[in-house]
Image 1 (cartoon, one colour):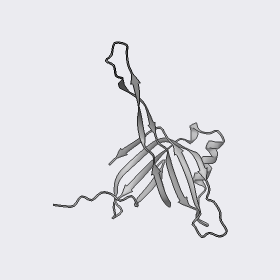
Image 2: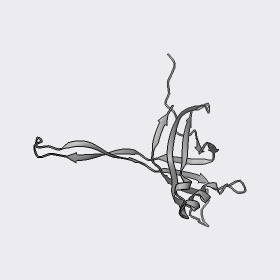
Image 3: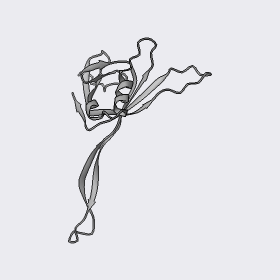
Image 4: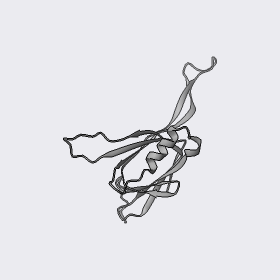
Length: 147
């Protein structure tokens, strides 16, 4: 019988509107939740019923190292455009592709209508030797898992 090992979380790539974007050290996909609403009518038994409420899609957080000479400003400029009020024009589809150890695509998380809400450049410390990491956080209106 062949082994069916789970996927590891260290092989992935990102596509933003079908453009492959590489070089991320971390991608965090926050949880998706459906709110439960308590409801009771006067003639109901003495307990509440649970109804489904709104679905909330968690934010996506990207962390990446700043590269000398090869660093692109595309993600920073995307955040800057949203900051300038161009939210409707700047919504994009983000696809997070998880790969197996051989580098073959195995599953995808498709994030719809995403736009950046937070940009955090790395702290600087003259006594440190850490890599300079930028953080970009996105809100979205849907996360779907596809195989």
